[in-house]
Image (cartoon, rainbow, N blue to C red; front, side, top):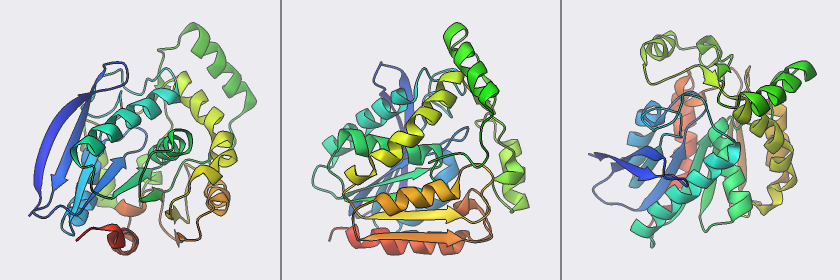
Length: 279
């Protein structure tokens, strides 16, 4: 049975960030997990436990302004702060386990952050897994709203607004929706800097996709009301490694690992990552 551990590390600017691990008896690889907007690492306990049962030492962190990490809920000065924090976290993991293969996993906003980190910093790793990655939004943002975000970011950068994420758009599973409403670590905020950072990085994500040299697994929702499935498909096509797989769960909503097809999504993930486990 995997053992749980909780800790803190200092982000790129000394902000105290929370992380947790699921450690198997026989560690055979490291798996670095980055959650999506408004959620936190504990949301991935079932996924992490299932991977740890196979030998993965899972490291999951709470981004600043999320979960048990410091920071105003939903606020970040720029998306680059998340990327810088992930770099610090990755170095912490590599220092502890330099001999093990590392797989990165990112969901939604976490997928954008993880991919941008790998594109721009080019660290050593074995494979990348993306779950409903934020490569674009499912609905075009009105120009007026984007202009207002620019104004707010200049004059009221710490202002946070409703992020427009409805739990009913995340999953068809009523029990999961009920648990989301009871989860006090979730929030419903987003800052102008975070919103504009996403808009800024969407085209860069596509332009620099050829920097992702590793194998890639992309798991997409067929009914995504938050992020653009088409933009994610375009991103996938630009990845150069021939060892890449795209799996579409036609009826699932945004969170494929928390929807009714979760068992299939988990099996597909394990099938892809487990060949990277060491002896």
